[in-house]
Image 1 (cartoon, rainbow, N blue to C red):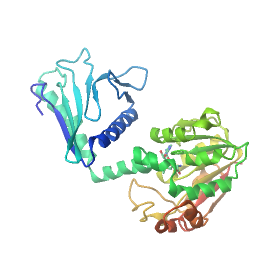
Image 2: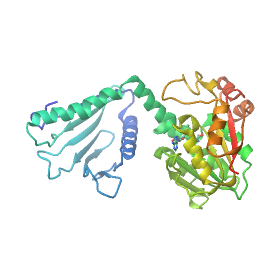
Image 3: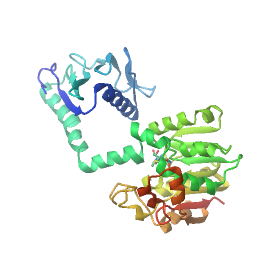
Image 4: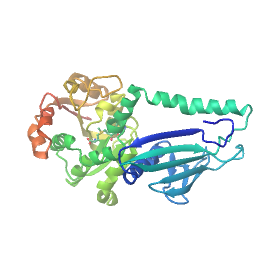
Length: 367
Ligand SMILES: C[S@@+](CC[C@H](N)C(=O)[O-])C[C@H]1O[C@@H](n2cnc3c(N)ncnc32)[C@H](O)[C@@H]1O
């Protein structure tokens, strides 16, 4: 870092990955652009592209230009200097250099900070410490890294491996079977799936001829769900919405039935989410939730019980959530899904997780 000149690099990050640039760059860029999107920014990966606010109203921080687009080697992004700025505009260069059979990624901020207030050195050192150093230290706290991995895998899946998994989530297929068998969908049903992930349950549900809607708070999952249900979307049989389980973006009494698979363990406030489902169901509407069981703690399906991780509840607790949300006819069953797990190709050593003591399903009705 060289805060006094304003011209030399002020942030440099170097990382080594054991894959060639041609494999590293697309993943890096995909992650980078979707992470920017989560923060409300769109970036074009093309010559002359732009980084701009995703909200049309008042782009708070202006915009930047993709000055150089040379994948998989180098990308250069330069912020437009606004009237308050001084000195050369800040720029970020992202370089992927082949090193042996791997890649060295170099990220370099240059062009100065543009800060003018004196003493400038103190301002720049303060910016670097507050905005770069302290967040970096907190981001590598072991608990934060685990929380990040939980988010990426289950709470709000993102990235290429989650997208590939949730397209056809083999470990959820036995649950889908139980849900669809229990719901016995008809053509006049309108199903809501909360936390629809990659849309695999929706795809199976739509095959019965019903119509459906899915909501999820992961942009990556909605992309997968849209792709694999493109026909139903185009035909108007399916609606997909970005949103939160506790504030469903649907009018009251819209659906005849609702389902949640693999979502309950991630909800900070299950009763609020169940109340929203109750509101959006028509009278007589049925509701099914895959509940899991605390017996799953310590297994590969849930990992150790820990603060902020997945939450698995006893049957009586889940039933209470449903009654508090207004549901009646509440019951929980524990079917033995091991034969289905075998039939859909779940590997032998994992099939015990589909035994009756692990998987639970809440069934409830809005009267
Ligand atoms: C473990 S995945 C299950 C996906 C899918 N239902 C399945 O069974 O394959 C959990 C899904 O719920 C979504 N989710 C979790 N909490 C949510 C919330 N509060 N609002 C909306 N979606 C949520 C996640 O983004 C993710 O797609």
